[in-house]
Amino acid sequence: MNEVFGCGIDLEELSRFDKYIRNNDYSLMEDICTERELMNVDGDKRARLALSFSCKEAFLKALGVSWTNSNFSLKDIELLFGGP
Amino acid sequence: MPEITQEMRDQVKEIVYNFFAEECEVERESINSETKVIEDLEGDSLMFLELLEIFKKKYSLTVGVESIGKYIMKHPAETVGKIVDLILLIIEHGEKISEIG
Image 1 (cartoon, chains in turn orange, yellow):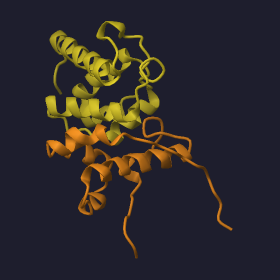
Image 2 (image 1 turned 90 degrees about the vertical axis):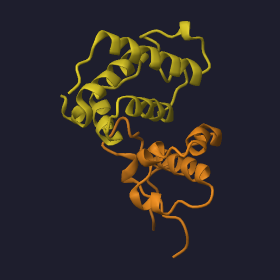
Image 3 (image 1 turned 120 degrees about the horizontal axis):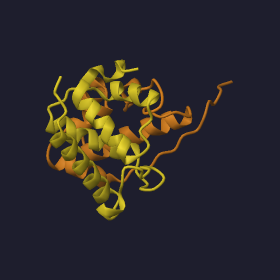
């Protein structure tokens, strides 16, 4: 039986990522995403950036930590989208 | 390693205070060094990442977020004043900030 270690929830406003996408500024994305995640960004970049940040924050919350108070980095978590 | 001048301190403080005033929609005058970022301003970690980006661009810093995270783990930056101090340390030490005890 699989064990659930925790549950984490995070919510971000898409508009907070607008200026980065509008200015083709990927600096924030590079802080949040791994190289593999960056290679696979297609479609709505704003939504992907928000989703990536939110998922990683939620994962860390499930563990009861944050990237600002643990040895975890946002890049220690990798999101793989798509089917097998 | 850049020398931190008083002018630089004032500039960093001004940028940090203005950033939180705008992002958190509060009066600039209501913010002081003891203002708590999360409790008083309802700030969050994304704001901190955005603030870092401003200074990484301004001072051409190449420091990784993970190095900063390791420093914050030992020295939590809960107030606006501590955020200003943290930014100055990042400018001064760059990637080596994680090695500061």
